[in-house]
View 1: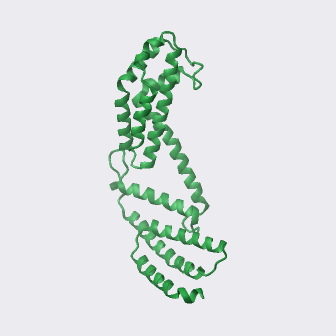
View 2: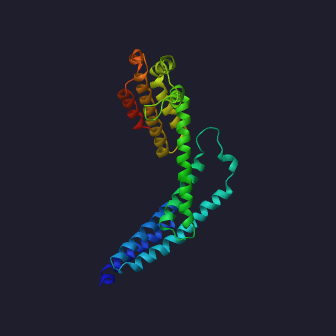
View 3: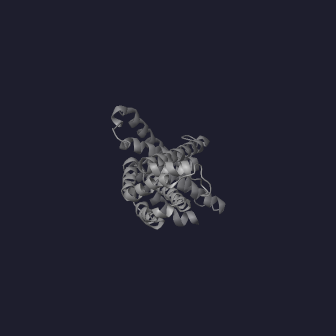
Length: 262
């Protein structure tokens, strides 16, 4: 009864798919369609509804060959590319390099979830995990370098003198040690925040990674300055620097402005 009722609509969809796929050159789009179709198959199987088995199987029969054709076209374009032309002087990757990286990452992600084992199998998950770990470690290093460049005296002072618990000191500071750090921060912190934001914008072409770096750097900055402020309160004569201390509220307000935009 189902086939008799839906024979016409299924035939129209089937014909439209064949015409559409013939003009499709987007490998990621095709792989997404494959994943969606496989998930539909799983849903129908769990519900014990076999009425769309033929249609969904036919959809995959159309999709996989087209995907492989388009994928081979991508590979051939890489072989034909002059690698020397992909280098540009600066911090941004060449747009072709970026497209290739994002294309590769997308395929690894999709194949890890619903691939057929011909492009990537279990090794896709390992490869994805490897690059996620590399990204995390390099993000931490980048944040450290960024803070040292724009707030080096603050970072060095906190690291050398103040423990994480704000109770003990790695080196006991005095007012002469802390005064130049406090006054220098009070003068330049807004400008330094803007410069730090601009550098992240320049260096990071990926919005998500750029925002992660910016938020991590500003969170660390806020934490370190809070430790410095608490240190000033404990040092004999530290109250004389109160007028130079920037309130945590003011810093947080500026940070929120930059955290919303990149």
